[in-house]
Image (tube, rainbow over all chains, first blue to last red; front, top):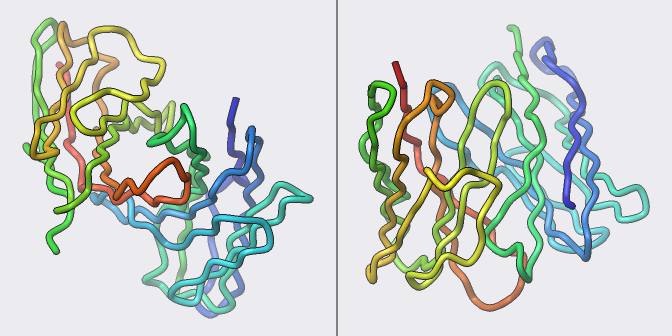
Length: 114
Length: 116
């Protein structure tokens, strides 16, 4: 079956530090890959996505590249802000009989200090 | 466009009761998925509906059920509540264009269910 593994957290950084959150996946077929962010008391917001190998998703300074050879989709940001403090989820979706189902990683809590 | 809305936002129930949660998708979205989020198990897929038909179901007991109406609004029901059903229940909608898998899902704020 499909699965997503994220690096263990929590992650604590100082403002303007470089961020990497690792994500690897196992899937049948060719999945689409997503990063979602969840702020306290809210639902999930789509941060970025990539639908095929070597695609790079980017948004709000965050980037992730779909690496089929290493089955990875690591999230990066060059300079984090306090407002980036949230929980980040890596997810994958496949078509066919699994359409409409996203498989999520366990989430990584990010805290950014001034 | 208005986002995904869920009602109610908070619910407190006692064991053995049943509960119904409601989700209104983004206008034009025909697919609605439901997830359960708990600290221990993370985000788990419950089921997905498209055009009033359940297309996919996660690994949850039969106490968890759902339906979708002709206007794409969806409800999920949990009967005979257990303490372990306490969770944040998230609804997500997407615009289904075919059999592709690239359609992202847009999430509502969730319904926080507490079972006492």
